[in-house]
Image (cartoon, rainbow, N blue to C red; front, side):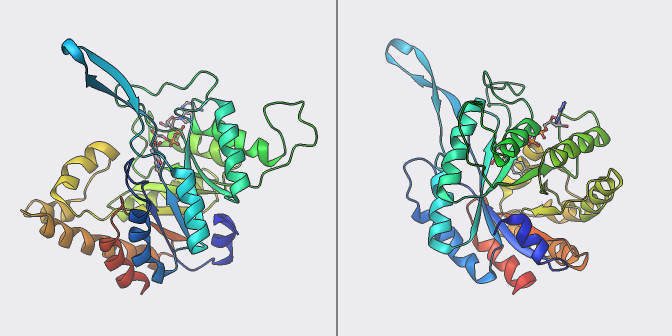
Length: 319
Ligand code: FAD
C-alpha cells in the first residue's frame, strides 16, 4: 500500500493524516511514540516525517575566535520512518529535499528507503540555509523539486545514475509534492507557481500536500486553479492549529500565510497560550468540518511534535 493507492481506495471519504518532526539530536525516539500514540485511535492513513538539513552556527573558541560549524539539529528522518512503520504498521512518508544532497547522495538515500520497505516520499526543494538569502543547490545536486521527482521516477523505471549497472532493480516510490494555496514566496505569481507545480506532476508525482492555510476559500480557489491548469491529482489540505502566542508572530512570517479577519479579531484579544489554543483549535475544527463537507481527500495536520491539540481536533472531526 502507498499514499495514492490509499487515497484512490477511499475516494469520497476524507482521511486523516499528520506530520511529525524528528526529535532534537540527543533526545529519545520515545518522544515520537508519545506524540503518535494518542492519535492512533483515529486511524491515520499515513504519517509524514520532516527532513531538517544542516544549519551553520558560530561557536566561541579560545582568544575570542568564532568558528563556523555545521550542525544538524534534527537528524533521523529515515530511521524514524522505518521505526514507525515497524511499530504501528502505518504508511510513513519521509520528506526528502534537494538541499544538502548531490544527486548521488539522493540515490543512496533512495536505496536505503527502498531496502527498508518505505515506498512513499514527499519530494521537496527545501528552504535556503538560514545564513543564505537564496537556495543554493549542492554541486551535482538539484535546483528544483521537479528534478528530484525526475530522479525518483527514473529509479522507478530502473534507471540509476550509473548506466552500467546490470539489470538494476526498479524502485516503487509513490511521490507527493508541495503546493501553495497562497503562492510560494519566491514565485512571480500564482499562475506561474501552478505551472511549475504541474511540471512536478508531469514528472511523476501522484498527489499534492498544501502548505498550511487558515482561510478555506484560498484552498478551494487553489484547487479550482489547479484543475483549470489540468492538474487532476488529489490535493490534500494541510492544517496547523495555532496554540501559542509565539505561533501568531512566527507563522505568517515563516510560512508566508495570512490570517483571515475573523481569526485575527479573536487572536488579537488573546493574552495567554491557553487563550490562543482555545481560538486556534476551534478554528481548525471549523476549517476541518468544512473541508470534510467539500470532500477533501484527506486532512493533513501539522503537529510540530505536539499531538494533544490535534487529538482534540481529530476527536471533533473524525471521532
Ligand atoms: P519547488 O517546487 O522547487 O519550488 C520552489 C520555487 O521555485 C517556487 O517559487 C516555484 O514556483 C519555483 N520553481 C519551481 N520549478 C521551477 C523551475 N523549473 N524554474 C523556475 N522556477 C521554478 N522543507 C524542508 O526543508 N523540510 C521539510 O520536511 C519540508 N516539508 C514541507 C512539507 C510541505 C507540505 C510543504 C508545503 C513544505 C515543506 N518544506 C520543507 C518547505 C519547502 O522545502 C519550501 O517551501 C521550499 O522553499 C520550496 O519547496 P518546493 O518543493 O515547493 O520547491
